Every structure is written in structure tokens, then in C-alpha cells.
Length: 212
Image 1 (cartoon, rainbow, N blue to C red):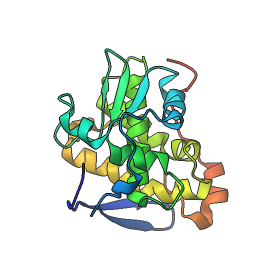
Image 2: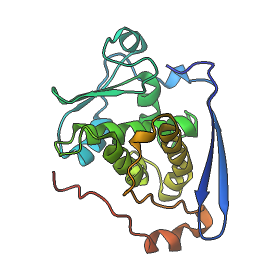
Image 3: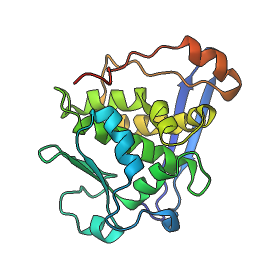
Image 4: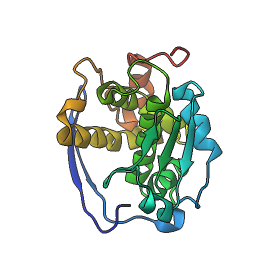
């Protein structure tokens, strides 16, 4: 749980015309939108299965369950048991993922929900890099906007959330430099005004979703 804790992320996002600096301040969590105890959200599992190729289960823990979970790390936003093929997400992350595209939770929380769902889905997937944080992290950012759309965001809204995803990636790499994949090609961010033309021109190298 993140409560009354402030993290500032300044992310430099390059485009052909400008550099966008994004400052994300995490100040509080909307507990009213948090997932119910023990809830397994069908939408989250459906979206996760796109990237895990149908493997595993996503579970939304209550705050009490999350606080008492001996498998989570102190500041973790989720984890995957790769032996038993299940992912556990805390209320903050589940609430964000289940409200993507809406207004009931902050944009940063929606982005965190997208990020963690995709990230853990690639840990669930039975491929040779499922334990490789660098490779999993690369696929997470590559599929970020795709997942946001599957969770309910419009194309333009997915692009509006993307800078938060880039901020999350930069934060992770600052904390864990060994999570960087030097071969990862990060999709650029397109301002909404340039979205229709630019997205059609951009083809990101992705792991095929139909293969393990």
C-alpha cells in the first residue's frame, strides 16, 4: 500500500519535435475504489491471458490479505508465483487496472495497474525469459498502450497514460539498473494531436502473442 508517500518522477520522453517532461506525484490512494477482498477480476484475467497465452490466474488481494502475505516484498506492487502460475496484486494496483479509462482513480494509478498487470502476465507466460526481469520489463513497456486499450481506454487515453508508464520504467531502471534490456526498443510517445498519423507509422518490435 502507498499512503501519504510522495515519489516524484521526471521523465524525458523524446519525440521528433520536442521533449516532454512529466512530473508524477503520488500522494494518496483512493481506497473507495480498491478491489474487494479475495476478488478475482474477470477482466484482469482476460487481459493477462492475452500476454501469458492463457496461463495462470490474477488474484486481487484485500489490504489485510496483502499486508499479511509472507511472499510479498516490502515495497512490492505485486508478485507472481511461477511454480503455481498465479499472480497476486494489492488493492491499489487492482483498482487502477479495473478503472482504466475512467475518472474514479488517478491517472498514475491507472498506469500502475496497466504496468503491473502486463508485467506479471509475462512472468506467468511459459517462455524462456519468464524469470528475466529485463526481458519481461521490455515487453511490459512495448505492450503498455495495447493493454490499456484492452482494459477500457480509448486510443488517445492510452497515449495519455503512456508517459506514466515510461516514468514507471525509468523509476524501475533507476532502482534496479540490471533490469535494463539493451536490445529493447521502447515505443515513442505521441501527443494526442499527432496520434492518428504517428501511430500508424510506428511499428514496435513485439514478442508474438501467439507463440510461447
